[in-house]
Image (cartoon, rainbow, N blue to C red; front, side, top):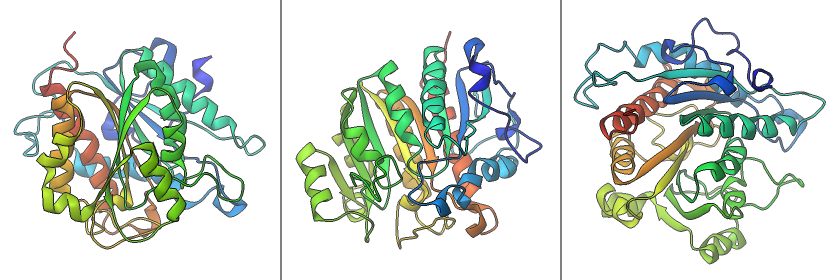
Length: 318
């Protein structure tokens, strides 16, 4: 039953931006569905409940600092977020994990996202480490083919680490193996991560578009968007360390530089207008390292910017 897939957000008194809680996914009636995926596929026992598992809670707790309500003017959107339309956004809670079955939550996550997509809603995922989009990528079969847009400092093409193939260093490698994932655009790459020469070679052999932060800065957002095919479906996965640490400092692997807030705003707006954004996630937030909650606030702003852009593009007209 769908009610076993998700549970109410833990340790918080509010849902994301105060939107209604909706745990019955078989009866989902929404345009946008917020879903927390706290748990990835850990490389060691120390990572089973790392601080990134607290990120969905942290984002919800401070979402009211970034969201003042439906009637407030939003200068990112030049109007109210819902633009006077009857838009239904719900919080579907979190996918729980079972300590005795460490892969079960991935199956539940895939099933939950499939239900959200079949209901015609746009899933917006709060991670969790960067392994958590892997079951989401599988669920995108419901709306494929899909072009994958990644914002990240790191390549994420490792086949495995410690025998684990669905951890946070492997999501784009796993995505590349899915028939319904079309072109892959990796934006914001810089510094060093877990990628070795063979991972870079594998990504290039696949045909992934590797766009460093320097290329983004030199070419500009509009030129990079022009490289992405028009009139298609897109899924956006945002690793917090892909963005400038001045606005997203709460990450485990910080890297100097990164995609700025204004660049991210333009990327989201451009994707929404050029085709169909079918979903997005923000992952890899480490709440204990945050400064004045700015990382969680930025995550909230990215979600609300995407919702507002989709509203204006006519996504939710019944």
